[in-house]
Length: 292
Image (tube, helix red, strand yellow):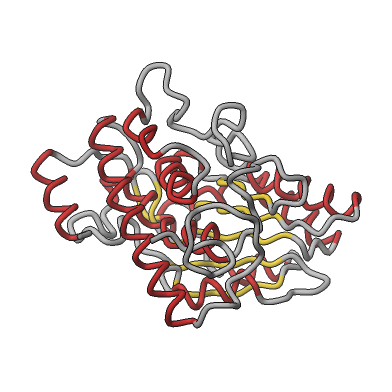
């Protein structure tokens, strides 16, 4: 079953705004079921492609599932709808998670997922807005998504529209200075239609973030730049929903979502080598068993 973005169980499709019509318990159950299918799909896509970024895909899955199935005001039948909310995956190397969610939500044909990263496939290793319905920005070079998101939020304000912009960033990505320029601009302008979500799994390519270039105290940094900042469990659907939907007048919101890289597959969880390692056929079977 697919959970429509207004919180009602339904076939994918139709614009909506929130999940208030569904009880928290029912919403969490349906989001969990959807996220499990997304994770299984990710494993299959990376197995077929023999490439990808499985650790980060699995850590961000619950964030993306919550956004697309209970928060974002979107219409898969009309992906260019002018009043849609905008979502930008700044950590674009985790495109497999985004593609899987877009397929579950009805933006793209699920059969396309098996072409991931194949020659001439529209599903590149990084998302391309000109090729894939539902993708708002080409991302891959780290540090670009939040600046684009700030521009998107400013555009909404200038046009008098009500749509919001959500940006997911990797925590290692925050070592790029362009993020902090964008954060400063958003705080200065009071962009309360902007939500930045940090996938805080504490691992990046090759090492832990705190061993590479220390980020903590991360929440204090965002707050100092004028953001309304919250820290949550990034795998708790209730906490994610509340953080994404709670009002934050006069300030942009930063949600630091503490996650586990490789979430859901025991031998991948919190292991640095799984940033872009590909599971063996035997490991694929084990992973799918754990996600069943």
